Image (cartoon, rainbow, N blue to C red; front, side, top):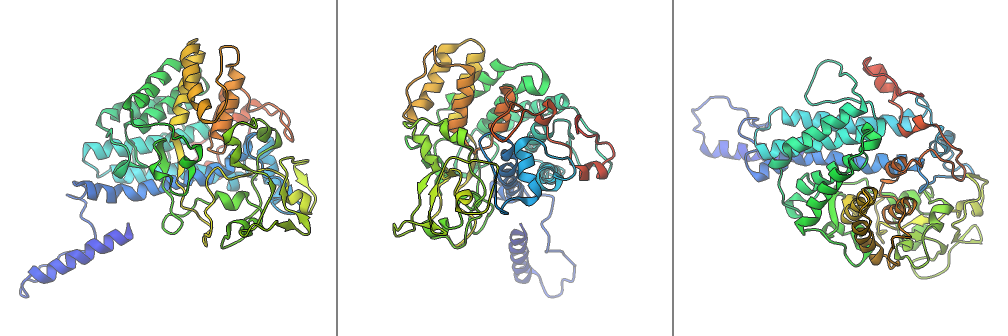
Length: 493
């Protein structure tokens, strides 16, 4: 935005010199964009909202950490590496502390939501174009949705205010978000792709409403399965989305053209950084495999049981890196003299120093790893909503409504692309639906929400004992409670 201001100021200065007589001494200001009259054209509107969408990039950064609270991602301790005061152990086993872990996991997530909401509110204070206002309100609702999902009892910030905001219940948050999205829906554009790629339009808002309704029983106590189906039908009937034959094309370094993407966060390694999943998951010496500019951090892996949930026939299993690793020339790599073989078996959460611990765990290559990349960041756009999830969500809602035939049609479209046998009325069950969502959507950060909806988030899994029900909500960050005396901590903390 600063560069845009400079360009406009420079243009105004040139016009001033060309048109003003030397005897005209009236002072005019040319170093700011006039609030009145700016934002009336598509180009001007894009200039205004571009910085607001840049804030969505924090979605990846925050959820890549919070996803360690699920059964699909683990950040084990390897000698002294990734011990970090046992914070990753606490997030994995659901023993996180509201104060001690607030700075790492929770305060940043809260700030992501409300800093972005404030920025949107600032723009809404002067926006006049109905389509622009609708888009901004939809974006604001998206940030409120994240706050409601993660923290439950949060803040409805629908305008700029100089006073401390009051806290709302999760049900109140739900009602506000739903009302906002339904109110602005008619004014939203139905256009997809092109200038509307990565922006709030009707299909994105349909998806957001469907997420609300699919999880309504968790959020409000009242199921809304048919409402979810209705919104998902809206997306399907546009005819604008499809499943590409190649599952991995949607996650390539040039994935913005995928017909599956409904809403994504644009990233660019030089101009819009932050997409660094490869650095988080790859081994230090994987630098030689992909000819990277720096050594990865050898942290994130997938738990053994989650890796084993993939059938050998499932093409999606290729998202995991296991086995012997090689350098860019094809030469086998080693780790301190030990063959560099990624072993999907993780024997303990805290492993002793040495090659065995460093090599434990399958690593992710779902998002294509950018070879010969001198930057830590990559060009892949991070996908938030996509068409396969539309089919899986609609199939689940139909199944819960008793419409098994319709559910089978949706699930089997996704299964067929993965090279897996079709479900039948005998094999499609609620536990299998959760498992299939895990295989399709691994590391796309829907897993916590799914586990909670299926009442599985607090169950025990390897290295994690059963946890209390209150852990389904993250704690309100202590820093925020200090700043706003209206905020009360979530029960249990």
